Length: 242
Image (cartoon, rainbow, N blue to C red; front, side):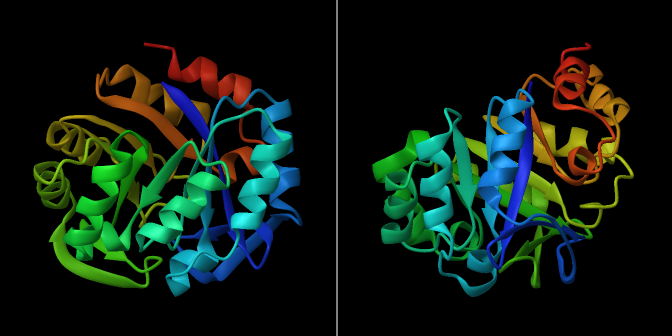
């Protein structure tokens, strides 16, 4: 499995939120490029970057930051936040994203999803984010009545094969994964997926690795790395400890 250091961009800075609350943000780096550089120097093999301003407004706000990161650093990036039309998807790919992460629009706009899958299927992931088990959209500001596992099933029927799953209730709390939930989501996914939400220690990573879920390809973590709960090298080692 791959460890994905997370960089969330808000007002041009690298921040972390608690449970997706925009009013509870902590600035960790003044520059997202600075954050990306530090993770790559520490051994990151892939970066997970989210444009929080874009997620909130529905329009990408920091593609210039993506371009700066991919131009300077030799590391693949999966990028999401505000990608709700085909032009913004193309712009993110042109700015250097290896993969694009769709959220709200993939859930609410089937025609858009079909269009993106038709032209960029191999570079598309869909982020299914939940509160209380129900899908949250628009930067987690709204919650639907759709169950997370059911959303994955529906999206797979439309051709989606890669997912990011985030438990927004645990995000930023460092309390560890809900393993019952993790197993339930793993059973729903027929392709591959990445887990996010609540990682606080290397033991949490080890617990996911030792569950031996063959379709779980990686884990995203942000706050725990910024707060130096473990290093990227220690995280990589924990994810191989099966």
